[in-house]
Image (cartoon, rainbow, N blue to C red; front, side, top):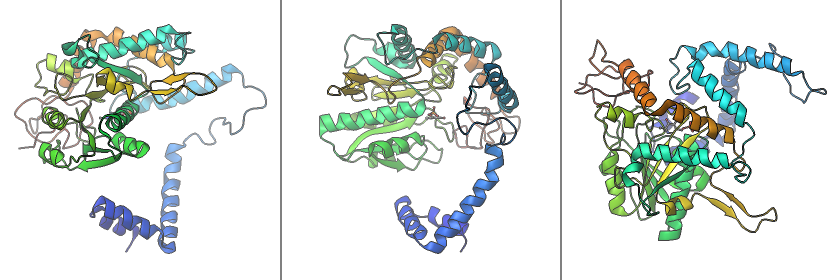
Length: 421
Ligand SMILES: Cc1ncc(COP(=O)(O)O)c(C=O)c1O
């Protein structure tokens, strides 16, 4: 049987059995060398598309003996940027560029140029970074139901951190749940229950932090199956997760049902709103039927929302939010005994690009509620009903009883999330 045949057979197996079978198969020398050959052939085919500049522009595999004049460097950077611009300029690159307007980019670049040296690790030198980040968190929390729980009670306040992206927001929240459960419930073999469609960042978190991730198959409409998720909970479960919306299909999981289950079991619930955090609140205001997904839902204890997606900031920022400062405290890292001094850092990195926080803050303040509303209105209008199937999601191929907001112009036949009729 060829490699593709073996792979197809493995895919039909239970993932654990498949992983064990794969380990055994690759230990056989003939299979190993066949795999290596296939791998080399595949890489050779990709080489030209991922390294198109080879031999075309000056390259530096070692430091140049003498520094290259800045003009020449700028020339090369300009040249490469000009070659790549047409790839995204006209849109149709869902998940890559979210704004793309020249004036907006020029404005963000100006803010970056002014603040490029800022490092939030040194809050004493740059208290402005603390201000920008605190305001980013407050504005995002306010938008996601935080205003509804405005309180002086630190156990109920919506608090958070600015991170480097959706993946880091998810990593940090999962690490917080792991350590919270160890401290408060003595769970030493933590498990996380997530629908099969939740972003792969949850797998990364599970791998990094040694959490067992239990992936639960979704229902026929590609949304999480609440009963199946409930059944997957064990006494080691530290949290459940759901998406608003999911990356693979763009559908919103039944967050209210999932969060109610988590609440009933006294465990955490994370809404991954990396994609929808800066769209759904505005869609609701525009009259779309958006189900509960944020801190207005009682069992939601943490959320991720990406400023560098529909928040229209430059790449490199996201927000992770928690219900209560106590839960957030498990995200933090502190070292008191290091000879280098007392060390505290809230996120994964040590030194951080404060300029990206300044840019994010500037993007949010410049866009404002009216800007986000207008952008959402235009996205919704772009996903108007298909003349062939009557569906509101772009090129969805099904018909629906009500308008569904597509967060993307790229769409698969399953994008919209309602079963087609
Ligand atoms: C729903 C969802 N969660 C998490 C992520 C991860 O975000 P990032 O690529 O910023 O790490 C993405 C990225 O597209 C996403 O769509």
